[in-house]
Image (tube, rainbow, N blue to C red):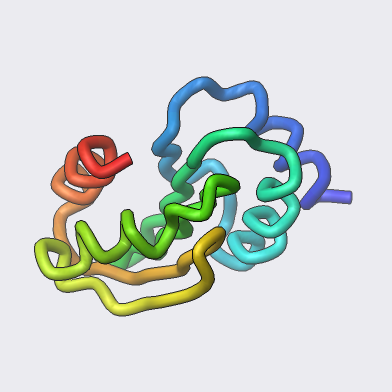
Length: 104
């Protein structure tokens, strides 16, 4: 199954912030599957037409805290649980990546 394949592929990647490694349509199922496989926070970002969707996956339960730290700067909309937050921002992708890397 594509979701399982994507999860295995992502588990091989060392970066905490990953851009365009999964299609936006797979963001939710891949994020939920990843939650059970990772031991520290990972953030997946998909880009399309200047709107960036992101998922903060935090097995340690820090997803809402990370989102709260970046929400205002990124003018992001979103929400979720302590372990998974989904959000959307139209800020430049490089700014999003840098802010997220500092917030993890």
